[in-house]
Image 1: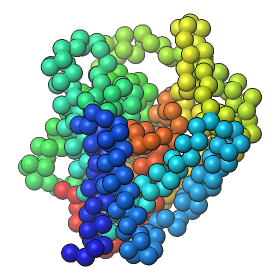
Image 2: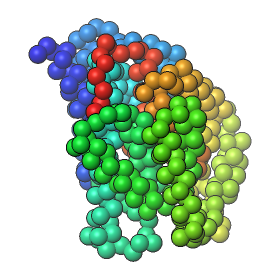
Image 3: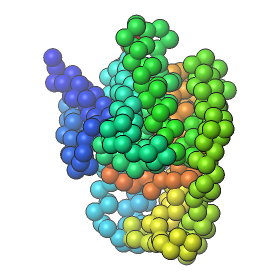
Image 4: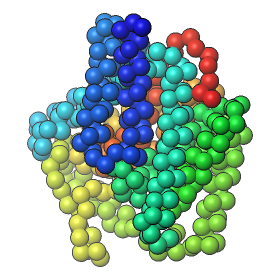
Length: 383
């Protein structure tokens, strides 16, 4: 086995860890350290061994990402805040390098890793449901919280929705009995987890994603997923309407108006990574973000940062549309629409340490770079 082959296997294991380990780990610190060892380090060593960047890293999306990163560092220098956040663009860059490296090693490997990571996530979702209600004895009306470190309902729903879409779009057309059984268990796990998580913004985002993806691809499995989603939301309306009505808009308009006010006060370079608070008088408490990622980017990085983020998001969408006939292209369209809609009602911002929201912010960019670079000649399928 060549040295390059070892780095590729090591990086592949790190990508699985990034997507799946939070279901079983109990410490964010351990998660971040494991990513450093199993994902970032081998990706860097692979590039040094090959003495060349993966082809996908040379696409226009990467240029916009570098501009966005440079603008972020400028904002930190001008507006201040925690200077430790200056390392976050480098963490993201190493993750993108790892995804592009796995893609360059072969199409089959990337598709298989994404598909089976989705299946594993579905099993984690099912186990979370059983433990939360069966072992811990929570009332059925409580919002489901995942096992591991994705321990808030919205964060976990974001990750589960993204992984479920990957599995749905990358599922093999023909599979053996054990594979089908694994897929069915995962699908039930995601349905239970997302339903009992009661995160309405994620429900809307999933419906929008499946609608757009089904219209473009007319894939029967995706059409079936859309039908299940519509029937599920109708069932909730008929059987459990309080879930849709009791929290109203969850004070989103108040948070958004507070965020717009702060954005206008700091429109050029934003507030950087300084702490801010948006008051909600009805609750007699304050919030540390406006529950809208795009608005959060504008508040922290100013108009220039928002424009660069929108340009990056548009470039990812355009790449996805160019490859909508391809399995990975369909998966990227589904993930891009889901992320865009879900992050309108929540999302702390793109510059975080590895977390559930990375599946909505940086995984789409990684897959876009994979499509930009093409794949090694390999025709095997995930199943």
